[in-house]
Length: 572
Image 1 (cartoon, rainbow, N blue to C red):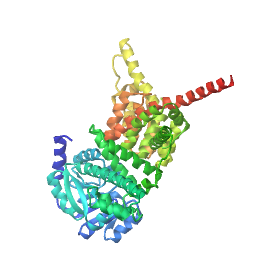
Image 2 (cartoon, one colour):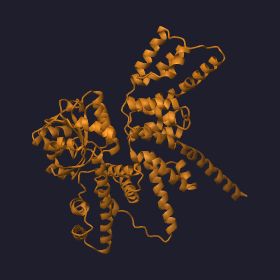
Image 3 (cartoon, rainbow, N blue to C red):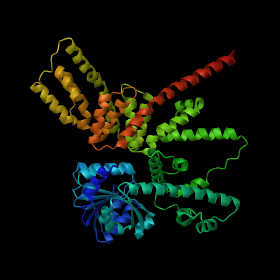
Image 4 (cartoon, rainbow, N blue to C red):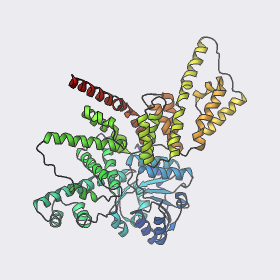
């Protein structure tokens, strides 16, 4: 973040006044006891959660339960967020901004475990609305939340920290880690270390048990020695060894934080080989365990892994590598198919390299699973590509990720507009040739009908661009038809405008199209609707991996032909 950007954020936030009325969005395992402590401290706390039971529990604790985020924010001096990830944080903020619910001079305190680069971008957006953003993720678990004993990692300017400190001190011990984004970076690094410690402790305890050591005594001794960590002090004695596995913090949330840390390292040009290996192992555990598994269950998963005993070491290694590659493809694309099997059989090294390339947007997860699948669908469904296996795969995956049938069909409708680029490219060429041959001297002024068509397009689509001018001038009928055709989704669809623009970016950027004028326009539009740099980069990354469909289409054919030759040779 530049010094100018930081000063913009600081100037907004430093004028904060004492907080009296607080909105609390996210009343889950952590948020509910945190909100209750603020109620006990004398704050008026207007709480919202998607779960009606959580809202009822908040009301029972003395808070005010409301039915939507905008109502919670109404009249609040501070807005506290305790949400699962950056994508949800951004979606909630987008909704509040659209509803004009965030009043100038208020402060948003994001106590979620969000992505630090996203936090900085969001802080700049809010600063333009004279709203401050402070990142303040926590460590200490449900017990720390209930006791007001959390460690709170704050990202803000020094004077802003003093503004929010009184509020945060009711929840635990706030520590300023640096400027905006520093709190979320610190939390991600902390959780990468914590998760690695937990898995290492599980492996160590298993070794001890196999040797005949008492696990309780082993953990107790290590905890008073140089191998001690939060796992030996808390997680093993309280959740793993008693086999309760109920710390209140989900395995997938821990994995998300680990990936934030390793992604941050990559964005800074740093390698984290140990961290990457830990992420891969936690990924395996997440695949094997239920979606709501507590993060301490990784120890149970580790202990249950089979001990490989084989004299065919090389063969076992190959089978293990093949299994790992299949899991990576399933994590990236949601399913395995015969097409992937053909690539694995013929060129496993090539498939392994692809998983490293295609896994980046999944690991970064700026878009979230549903939007990511809709973007994949836009690339495959565009008339310039029409990859039927990919369309089927990503329709299935999008629905599984929570997309509605209407949202899926809306992506197809938006992708169907790609054909107009024949006019976007062809009409300017026609005008140029007419001008060179002396058959055109200049643009004709618009008629009242054409002016009305331009007004309608701008109203329905939210923008106007110069490349529409000549099409409208030369053929207002086709322009009117295109306006009606392309505006259906904008009038009746349910996807947010930002996601609609993501669809356009996806098929314009695809290697089968590469339409630069449209790509530039829709990136500008998406940014105008609040898209982050990370989200747009992820769309481009998704479009970039479509080339692998050459292999998934061709390799099964190659495999069939090789098998046919072999069969023919056997017959001779």
